[in-house]
Image: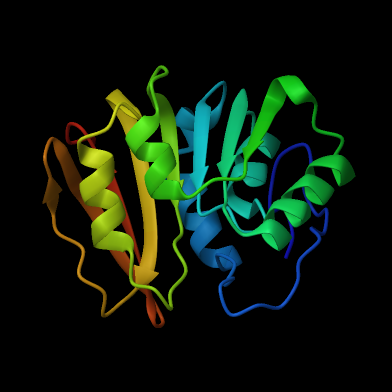
Length: 185
C-alpha cells in the first residue's frame, strides 16, 4: 500500500493482514482523488473506519489541511500512528481518535468537515447504518463531499436525509458511492 500522488508520492505505508482491513485499491483511490482534485487542498477531512489511515494520508499528501482519523481497533490505531510518524505529519495536521465510529458521529459537536471518507469493514455491512447516522449528525456542512466504499451487494440508498448520491461506480466486488448535500457538477 502506497501514497499515489502529492508530497508523499511513492511512499509505502505500514500495514498488516487482518480480516477487518481491506485497503482501498490504488485505482479506486486515484479515481476518487481525480474527481475531487479541486476540493482536497486545504480541506478539513474525516477518515471513518480509518484502518491504516490510507485515505486520510493520501488527502494530506495532496494538500488537505487536517485529517481526523476515527478507528476503534487498537492494532489499526497503532498502524495509523506509525504511518503518521513515518511521513512526519505534524500534530497540527492530524488527530487520531480511538473510538467507535457511530459513537463519534453521534457525539461530534464541531464544525462540519469538507471531505468525509468512509470505508467500513466489509464483513460487517455497516454502510447503510453509517450513512443514516451521518445524515442526522453535525459532521457535514453545505459543501461536504462524502465517499463510501462497500461491497457491491451491500444496500446503499441514493438519499440519506439531505445527503444525495451523485455518483456510484463498481470496482470488482466493491462499489464507491459519492454523496454531497447538494448535487455537484
